[in-house]
Image (tube, rainbow, N blue to C red; front, side, top):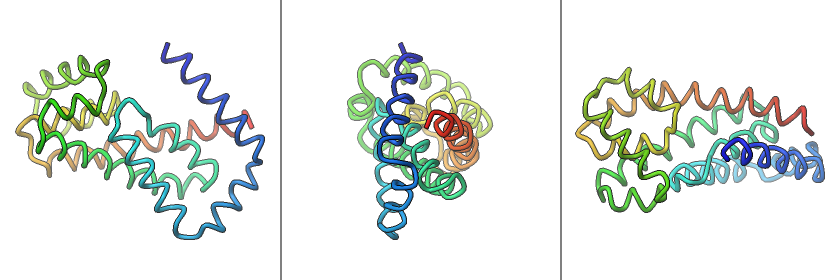
Length: 178
């Protein structure tokens, strides 16, 4: 089911960018000035907060319209911002609010991550766990007594790898479909 969704998503993005024209999309971004990167960061961060959505597709589109290097930097900021907000939402409001934001289908995943994190609180473990579903892991870590600074270190390191994979691999695949 997930694979089918990804295929449909990629084909859809390719068709939209083909219809608009990649150069036209890039020119529109340039004309928007500083507003475009700010809006991109906000949309990407929100897509991570509402966990059933996926920031990855937004990162990939960003790679195509902003260029891979700029999109990497913007997406990394958005990832750090969105996942940090997940952590604090979970820490402040608890499991019930986190469960509403991640959706009922992801609740089982949240519980599984919670059990793993209660046993292992090391930064390295969080770095290894984040690529699986960094948005859900961020909510899960917020429900534990892991210090934010430890979480942030793991997030910044793992986020760079996650974002790089989406931007460089995902955007390259999208560009071949355009």
